[in-house]
Amino acid sequence: NAGVTQTPKFQVLKTGQSMTLQCAQDMNHNSMYWYRQDPGMGLRLIYYSASEGTTDKGEVPNGYNVSRLNKREFSLRLESAAPSQTSVYFCASSESGGPGVEQYFGPGTRLTVT
Amino acid sequence: EDQVTQSPEALRLQEGESSSLNCSYTVSGLRGLFWYRQDPGKGPEFLFTLYSAGEEKEKERLKATLTKKESFLHITAPKPEDSATYLCAVNGGATNKLIFGTGTLLAVQP
Image 1 (cartoon, one colour):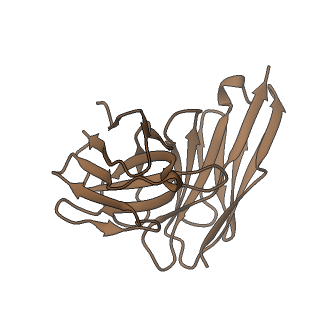
Image 2 (spheres, rainbow over the protein chains, first blue to last red):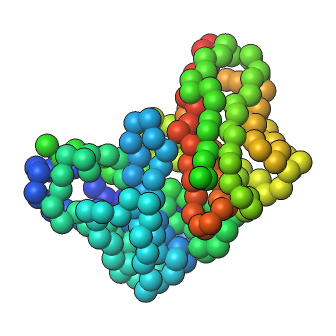
């Protein structure tokens, strides 16, 4: 099992460009999440999908959109990248979206917006 | 406001020198406290879940404990390969989402 995979690993964008970060999991998990990690701050939730067909905003959703393509895949789109979106992005999945359920993380995408 | 605070921010130990990392939290109705390990350039790796005060869990040289206000990650006789950032997260309060601390960077020197 690969667990949670993310592509690309690294990306450099210019301000105003768009891109989609891809995430897939092979653990048959129902819930998936997108986080960003910035220096000196804890992981912050951008969007999540409790189950296939549903998506909801997290703590920092502005400037992002998501698509739960199927049970395995959850993508994050930046429509018009800004320097403030320079960060490391992590996708995670969990068996359910219920309380007290551990999440499993992918290796991350390191994004720089110039 | 729901909050998670980890201390110290960084800790340097000699190989074999045991110590503890702290995670204090303010959240109403804790539904789970999680410990993760994160190596440089990698995603967080799940270690433990604790649900109620008094609970303890162990894995190799690591032991996690939980009280009503904080959790400790005890590291016994650490080795250089234990060097990593250790993250704490809680699930509770008004939302069902994980709230992460900023982590403790542990360096174990041979």
